[in-house]
Length: 95
Image (tube, rainbow, N blue to C red; front, side):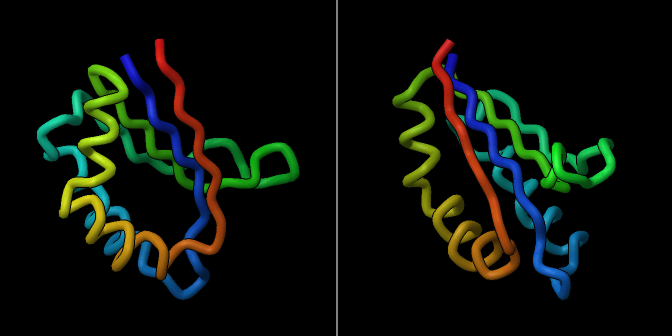
């Protein structure tokens, strides 16, 4: 299994409802086994600086690579995520 994790904050003027709603479409992509996109319940602070969490599970690295190149993913990242996110970090692991 391959797990893709992204922690991020939206720009102050971004609509969370619109951005998160658009990003949830990623769950329907063919190589996604599971996708969770939720607001962090830990109050923001020095040890918890990110408000949003995305966790995507894939069968393997090849499935993750196909997701990365899928036209819907590319479109959402370019036109929804990047313009509306002020900062993010991500990490991937193979299990």
